[in-house]
Amino acid sequence: MLFQTPTIAIFLALLSAAAGAPSPLLSSTGVPTTFLPTTTKLVSILADVTVSTSTSGIAAESNDGTTFLTSSTSSLDMISTLSTLGSGALILKNVRVSDVTGGSTGLVDTVHGRALTTVFESKLLSKFDANPQLLLIALEGSNSGIEEEDEEEQLVELVMEDVATVFENALAHARVMGDEEEFEGLTLEDLYTVKVVMVNSNEDDQKMLSMAANEQSETSSSLSENLTEAVTTAYTQSQTLASLRSTDTPTVTEGLITCDESLSRNSRASRAKLTGWKSRVLRGYTVDKFGTQASSLLARTLASYDRETIACAGTQQAGVYRMERRRVLQTRIENGLEELFTAQILVLEQTTLKKFKAVLLRNLKKDTTAEQGFDNNAAAVRASAFAFDQALSDLEITGMTTSLMKKEFFNTEMTTKLEAALLTFPDSPAAQISQLEKVEKTVNKKSKTPTQRSINFGLSLVGMLRPDGFGNVQGYTGYTLGPHSVTMGWQNDADSPDVMNQFGGMRPPLLRIQPKLNLDVEL
Image (cartoon, rainbow, N blue to C red):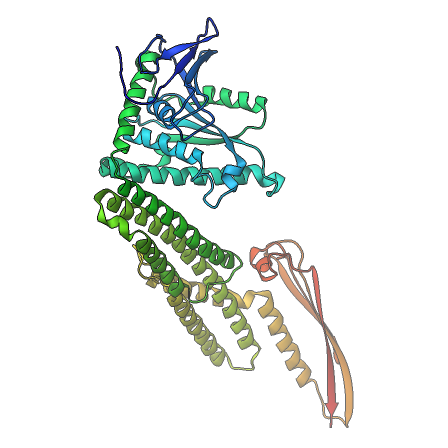
């Protein structure tokens, strides 16, 4: 079977398991010259990626039952061929740390980003298997700007984010070129199991190859034909896909690039704003006028994207792709805003409860009747609930796909928490100490008798002992000698999360003593 193609010359070579020497698999015109049987384990390696059309071909080597197909200088044609093959594991080598951390867009706009785009598009536009294929990213080098213990974890996270971004772009391209319904709900995890491996030595390289041979999915599709026919078919199909992609006019291609650049630029701008807000929320504060600012950010970012890509709306393909990229941008921003909205509700609840307890403590110290105290506490509940409702109004975001508005159950739940705090407040240490001080003050007043003019001094000590525990045991004791008094409280709540939050996440001091000097003047 002969395949004559007008494309670039391709050399595919095979390292025979018996002879150990490479031999041609396909001629430069696509004519198969060597027969290879079906293999159970197949690993395809893309090394030294180049965007040119020149290639050193593909070599094959059999080792311990695994066939390794290697393209030592991987052009886009070779990448598409091995990706369309769709079987076994796929390795992208020679990705350097500087490719990930050097530019503002990371791996996306490098030759490796182009290679991954070709990998994903070739898989998406061919009859891809439903089972995920193992994809290994070999990362070389180190980055001295990152702490050593966190370096690998952060680099892996950056690479995974860039790979996900490249897949989103490729999926959007595939939707433009193919049937949009076919790709509905499709994710990167449906097609690939992506792993990032640090490779800084020959030993690391061998471990990676062993991993590719041993960890490829057991459910991954196996070749139903001999390897020569499979590679030949994949090459022919890759040429068909290349010709499909080349049908775009320069105007359409320029429009697609413009949409991608605008998406990347506006995503970075909005992400910087969201990161600043998230940092503030994590410190226990809300964002001032969050709803207004968030609505403005969403509208401003989408308007910026629309202005930058308005020229793409004139062509059908670029116009569809423009709207697809716009939906991606909008979804990214809305997801971040929804996360901030939920987090700030929790912050508001904690702040409202803290202020409410402070009001209850002030009411308790006032000389009021029981009926007046009940009315004051009821008013405090209503005031706190109203303040919480007003604060929620500042968080409302309009203009989103699903607007984030305050709901009735938020206020109902907050009122329930306020009433629960009111019921448990009399048993709190602060309330009991305040009550004890009031009793002592009343007793001291009644014990006084009219005397001649004099000035008396008295020392009062109020102490609180807070050992380890969660507040299940508490007690108080006091002693009075003339104008002097000692009051000591004890409660094992040093490990209680509520108590630690009051001290900024730290344990409270074991012993707290508050001295007070009383001056009694009789005129």
